[in-house]
Image 1: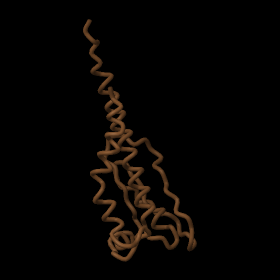
Image 2: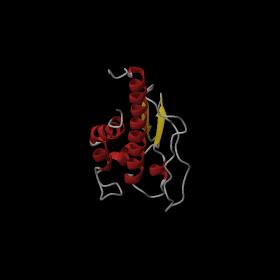
Image 3: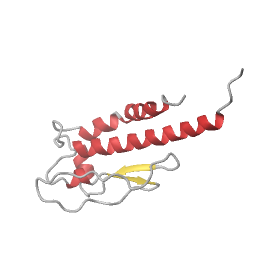
Image 4: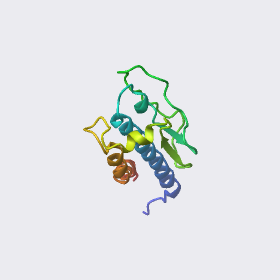
Length: 134
């Protein structure tokens, strides 16, 4: 007896896996950026935001020295139907990202090392959910 064709069901499962993979990738990258950001007050580390369709222009409030960074998770459902952006809109964010003497994880190149792993991190996030589609 032939198996019943499950085309529509498989497409739905793949769509869901892609949405979950994208969400995992974006939230993981946002967390890595926050964890590696130079830390004086925690404001830079707390100002990495995920935006849907357009970059989120938010910045964290001023924080006293020694404050613990807070990663703000997206309030919207992350789906493959739009572009997504991870941004930090503090005026010194770019300078801090590319300053070779900054960063919490042993100094310079923290931003570049995260950036250089984006393709592998995305592949791992999508593979994790796509391998569950049967």
